[in-house]
Image 1 (cartoon, rainbow, N blue to C red):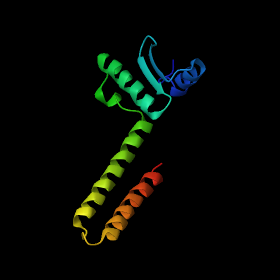
Image 2: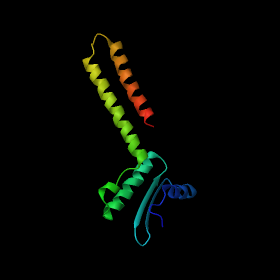
Image 3: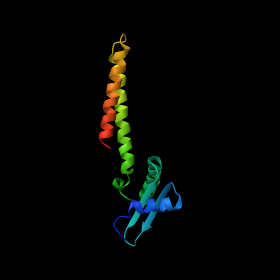
Length: 122
């Protein structure tokens, strides 16, 4: 058995069987394997959560109990957009109440910058 079971194998099985989530536990006589797959990012995260519970129960180290990279990437993008919105809201507080156009322009600039950063990291 290989060191790692490819996620693509579970993805192919999921497509063939019409599954939205799949969690595989396998033991080859020497090593245990946990592989998860979800059709979209939310389902991927849900499958990973269940797989991580299995890993925890099996005594796997915390470093092997993570969300998939595509989920972590979306979480990072969301965090950056939230930070941009926080910066934009602070501009609303700092800007002159007499100039609503300036408030909107500053807010749009900050959000556009955050979106560019998020797209660049794709």
